Image (cartoon, rainbow, N blue to C red):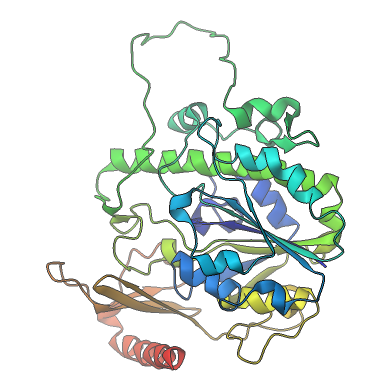
Length: 424
């Protein structure tokens, strides 16, 4: 078996077309999802990078030691050093390949695009391998392509797929008409009318928003922030499109399973904060993408509505290689769900997060989401438990706790029992 994992760190589901976004251009990820099984309720158990990596690999033991002898394991670091994982994570892999962003490159993923043919050459003779690619492209400070940003400012559609994909080739160069989109060297179009504001300064992206409080009531700041992020998401999608196309050229769409996920969703002011300033376990932070493209696009288009969580990735990866997960694995093999052979083993999904002297726990069921602060920092305003109706209140804006105290008590009791069980 061959497995390729794309860890798009910081990626919230709400910015992808496959999860219902209708204004941000993500044609390549949407196409991949159409060929895959999409897990609609993939909820983080602990939305922070180190916890996600531990969950994905089933702990800190070398991942290769859990696979068959001779299976190659290769991790590609396409992230900046300041978002590196702990040392134990890199020790889990047979080989670590650095495709880090280079200062002279036009895009943070240009090094990965350039090196991708060489990376796959290293695996060419392996009958079984797992290739894991991590990128922090969606974590600020962002590299923003100005023309894509301006298209969003003008409320134009994102560039079409054929104009915005970048294909690696055997000589490591970007190919076709898509080179300019990746390199950021598009030629200026011929003007058709006189510019009515010839001396007007162009609007620059909000490329490095500070982590911390955000005034949701400021529409200009909201628009600036979100159109900047939309530009980054669209550019990432284009760059991934080049990798996907190259994998298809090599036939790895037929012989390999592909998995796309994220460690947490980067908050963008939806509930008054940018980044993880407080452990507020709202939708944008905890609802993560997860889609699994099986070899040959088996079960393409299936959607799984049951709850899944990051610890499920580990037993699923083992199952793809025909290996029974260890008895102490905390997650569930998702292949039966992907094939429509079984329902989800989870009745609900629980989440916990501690951040400094603040902490919160949350539970999500098919009809409710309850967020319960367990520690509020001194000097912060009080934060009471929050109850939202699901799936109607997708963005979690209408707290209905006051009229549903019995429901709150029931959910909180279930949540605290689950948290205690997890901590045993």
